[in-house]
Amino acid sequence: MKDEEMQQDLQAKAETAEEQAPDTITENTVASNSALADSEVSAVPFLQRVATEIYDWLDVITSAIIIVIVLFSFLFRVATIDGRSMMNTLYNGEKVIISNFGYTPKQKDIVVISRNMNNSVLEEETSELPIIKRVIAVEGQTVDIDFIRGVVTVDGEELDEPYVRQPTLTKYEVDFPVKVKEGCIFVMGDNRNESLDSRSDRIGDHGMVDTRYVLGHAIFRIFPFNKIGGLTHE
Image (cartoon, rainbow, N blue to C red; front, side, top):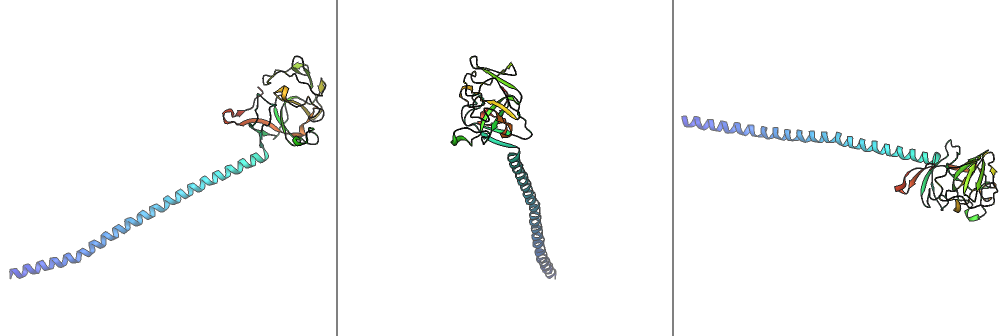
């Protein structure tokens, strides 16, 4: 009798174990699926954050590009130096930023000047090329040059010109002293003896450059990279 009871107990325990086993497997599977779902949910916000940051950066870059285009279309231009007339201040191939926004030419400024009907040269092939020079005098001022000493005077005062490559010894067609006409400027290159400028009839109106044809004031050198910086009067 006891043996039969023991067998019944064992059989009952086995059946109980079989009933509980599927439940355990089901619970483990549910737990695993739940963890996977949590992982997928947490991954979605991360990807969204990355996409949002990329979009923000692209928006900033696009805005910056548009601003640069607008600035260089309406406020600034890039000019490339062609020739030796502004040595030793500026050399052939160097690039400068010029601006004409609210600009009025002043003594010792470096300016880029167009060549056109009222500011031309005889050589047809170069008649469209702008020139870059330094303003020596503005309207109403009187310029005189002592070509023996190489000294320039404006309104009777000798100019201090540390930027010139050598004294002003070369004379062209213009006779001195000369008074700068209204609305005009008198310009010369820093490389005085290798510069075609207001000393010549071939520039402007007998050397007088109409300020309307000043394309801009050279304010900053951007190339070569080892010489990047502002352009001073020195």
